[in-house]
Image 1: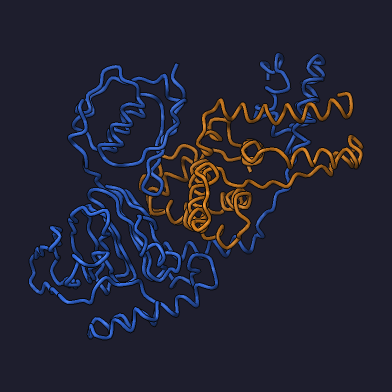
Image 2 (image 1 turned 180 degrees about the horizontal axis):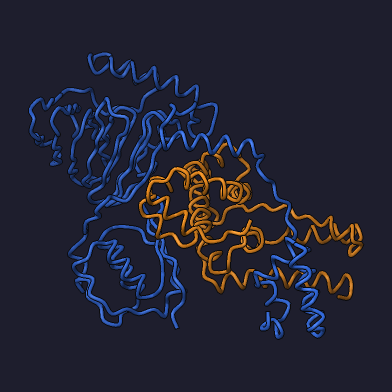
Amino acid sequence: MIAGKDTETLLQLTNDSEAAFSALMKKYYPALYRYGLRLTKDEALLTDCIQDVFINLWQNRHTAAAITYLQQYLLIALRRRILRVMQQERKSVLLTEEQANDPAFVLEFSVEDLIVEKQLEQEKADKLKELLNKLPQRQKEVIYLLYYQQQTPDQVAGIMQINRQSVYNLLSESMRKLKAFWRDTTPI
Amino acid sequence: MQHFEHYKAEDFLKEPAFIRWVLENTPKDEALWQQWLQQHPHQRNEVEEARLLLRSIKVEENDPCPEKVEEAIEQIQQMVHGRKPAPVYRLLYRWKYAAILLGAILTTGILYYKWQSPEAQSSMEANGSLPQLSTNIAEAINNSSDQEKEVRMEDGSTIRLAPHAVVRYGRHWATAGTRDVYLSGEAFFDVAKDPNKPFRVFSHELVVKVLGTSFRVKAPEKEKEFSVIVHTGKVSVYNRKNEQDRAGINAQILSGIVLKPNQQLVYQRKEEKFQKVLKEYPVLVNPAGNANNFQYENVPVAEVLEEIKAAYGIDIAYDKETISHCRITADLSNESIYKKLDLICMAMEARYNVIDGEVSLLAKPCE
């Protein structure tokens, strides 16, 4: 799932290569899908949004060579599109600007491995899960983009429209809570 | 890996090589890291701590099933390369729209009928399936010439009708709550400002609502695509087939899809999809507002971006804090907006993307 450079493929895309377009869709569709599912549970909506993102890429293919990080570009486009659709759908419900800009970000954490390895008893594992699920949405999104979309902190900043320092701050905040948990649980 | 020697746990947590080792755990990485740990035993605690932290935030991923992905990709290919007719397209993602669609097809038919016979209109309004019309349609102007034809309205607005375009409107705008016109074909509207009386253009399934601005509507009946291009001010565009949109059409405020200057909205009729794009050659919409004539000497980049935003009426998203120390000296007076952005990006090693008719700038902090 490592992104790698798409320079060559993008260049072909600029020259109307349908094969390049297909290759890029195959490469990034699953990653977009996984990310999108964090922002919305509505699969039909998500599929349509991903479709729009790729159609947009094709329509703008003649400038595609200028895209440095395609995965980031696609994630940004998808995030915006999903948020816009959700905002439109929620128009009847009054949302503050902050709520509208700060979407729900849902992660299911898995602590099973740690239990199996006996690093953690069931009871503690439940506590860990509770702690993780209580993390603010933005912290979850930073964690997810850094570790599960393997974006650099700069790229994460671009996707979430915040600055790099905020990315670091959100990350350290989560890690501080986790450290405290382990300190109380077992000596590391 | 030599610089890892002085890493703390939090540094490892930002290190791609470390992240890959913990999350993907390939034999190759495993061997590499075990060896490194033997050579640097003093780092064992930091690495272990980072590893434990990273492993405790393990996420359950839901992969799409491969067949679904394949199917979705195929559908996109068909749509963009147009080999086969696009399969049944979901309108705004919901089944219930199928029912509305059917209703809309019926209303379109009735609407057409109504244009033929204005008397039939009041009964249409009564059943509530259409937005309230301000007056009965009284005037119809049909530009059968092959030249543009200018129509002056009583409120001071002008409509320039392209050849073969037809416009109809009510006689009594002064007493009505809105100024409504019906258009088939292409026309440029220069609308006199009246915030209390929205100006609405009904064009087949498209509705454009403004308070006072100028814009062009291209909606020839037989075309597959309609477009709305904004020249100055803001306009709202609605799909009359969409239930939610219908409520917005009658409201006093601008809602729906809001377009700003230099933005163009393309409406694909068959797919019932809107797409916002940046006009191919954005023009200055506010030339007077630019005091410096785009010539800058050691000026904060944010200031330059704000001026460009105002001058072209285009949204440029960027992080103020990141570029707070970036300054620029440049003469951008004779450049197009794209060239201006290119030059700015070059100066500060940034990039920009145009997504959905908006510019998004990705920059690094300057020293």
